[in-house]
Each structure stands twice: as structure tokens, then as C-alpha cells.
Amino acid sequence: MVETDQTSAETAPRLALSIVIPVFNGADSVVELIGALERLRIPGGHEIVLVNDGSVDNSLQVLHALFDNARVPMTLIDLARNYGEHNAVMAGLRHSGGAHVITMDDDLQNPPEEVQRLLAFSQRSGKQVVYTYYDHKRHPMWRNFASRFASRVANFVLDKPSGLYLSSFRCMSAFVVREISRYEGPFPYVDGLILQVTQDIDRLLVNHLPRSSGRSNYTVRRLIRLWMSMFVNFSVMPLRISTFTGFILSALGALGGAIVVGEALFRSPPPGYASLMAAVLLLSGVQLLILGIVGEYLGRLYLTVNQKPQSIVKEVRRRQPSVAAERASPAWLSQSA
Figure (tube, helix red, strand yellow):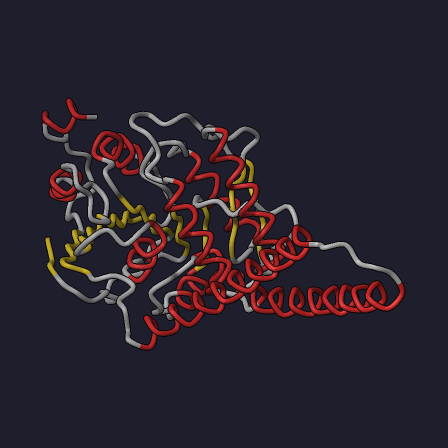
């Protein structure tokens, strides 16, 4: 049975697990990933929610073929354009119905068999959210550095538990999914939303593999945009830092002014052009930085008030296989894996 709909169906009995996978140019890896996930034996059953995030390759064609031959309940969501990983995940969460929901990437760096371990650990621990972490991440050096920097900032801005790695391979309870899905702003940051809902969080060590093909879709620009969503959307800490910076610079300016007056009264001051220009440039730079932070807040507020969409869903297809027996995938899919 295939259904095309724009709303989430809640009439079917709740499954034990929903697996939400945002897909962007993942045609070379998603076939193998979905095949492995379909073969999992999850007590209580599981579904797969695929979100095509405006892929420019043939990912959508591949996803439709996988959907037509699905061996487990599957939902295919096609977004109108590329909105980014977190926006795509939010769209997938709204169409998930499992008692637990696992999010994972489409690049096979997280082995599909770890899904069972993650679910079992979440059920056994009773935690609302379980993040995964790795002994060794198979990312480029610059990406690992950026992740460590973002983690340090999250410790400060989001009140993140110390030592918690914010991985995209995570398991959430239906309660957490329901609460974070209420957020409709245009700049979602899933981990920030999770930390607003709960601190009942644990972590699990899993394997991390090299990419099966291609390269990461995260560029420096995308990472900066993601970092800004975390830094600005979920905390007023940048504004407080700006205020403290203003106080400190004002105190230094007052001290410098007193020194200048003292030198003028008691000694012949040097011309001081270089020091004057350095002070002016420093203060001007800090002022522009603070104005930029305030402007970022105002710009995001303006876009939110004007209801910039978090994402636009072009099509939703749902499939509830009537026969659970395995069926062979089309030959062209096997060749493209």
C-alpha cells in the first residue's frame, strides 16, 4: 500500500523504532545502507524515514526505487530545495512514529548494526536521549578541529554536560521528539533543542568508519552557518559577552584617559600617533563586532517574524508492506551500491 500525503499519519500502531536519515547527494551509499537497515531484526518492528534534502544527483530516483521495493515500513519525504541537515532531520522527525527515534547520516560511517546496540542501550538505560561517540573519528583533521571547537562552545553556550559529544548518530524517546518537533523557527539546531527539553542523557561508544564513497557535504561555510545557529539561536550569551566586553573596554579607556591626563600635567607626552591609531582601530573593530552580533540577532528575528519556512515538503510517500518477506532489489540498484 502506497500513500501520498502531506501530513503525518498516526493511525498505525506505534513501532519500536523509527530511523530518520537525511539524504543529500547520497546515491552511492544509501542503497547499501537501507538494505542493511531493512535486514535488522528489531523486536516490535522498525520503520525508515528518508528525507531527500534537495539532492542534485540521482538520489531521489534511487530513493523512489528503494521505497517501491521496501521490506519494512518506509516514509519518503522530498523537500522542495536544500535546507541543510538539521532542517531535514526536523522534517523527518515530524513524520516518525516510533517509541524511539534514531537519526543517522547516509554515508555509512556509522555501521547499520550499531543501530540495534544503540536502541537496546537506550531501552535498557531508560534515558531520554543517548548520543554516540567514537574512539577515533574518520574525518579530515580540519573537520575534527571544527567539531572540538563547536563542542567547547556548546559547553559554554548550551549548558551541555561536560564530555558529551554531540553526534548526529543519536537515539531519542518519542517524548523528546514530540517536544523538539514543536519548534518551527527557520534556524533549527537539533542538539540545542534536545538540551532545552532534557538533561536525561547518556552516551554509547560505537565504531566510526571511513566514508564509503565521495566526500563530506559539510564545507567550511556550512559548518560556520551551523555554528552560528548554535551560538545565536539558542542563547543570549553572545549579547552578554558583548556587554562585558564593553564594560572592560570602558574601564581600560578610563584608565588610559587618566594616564594621558597625568602625562599632560606632569611630563611632556610623546607624539603617540601609533598608539592612538592602535587604540582607535581596536575600539572600532570591537564596536563593529558587537554591532554584527546584534545585527545577526535582529536579522534572524526578522526572518522568524516573517515566517521564513524551516523547510517546504514537496511530497510525502508512505509504504506499509503487506508481506514482510524479503524481496530482491532491482538489478540496477545492486549495481549502483
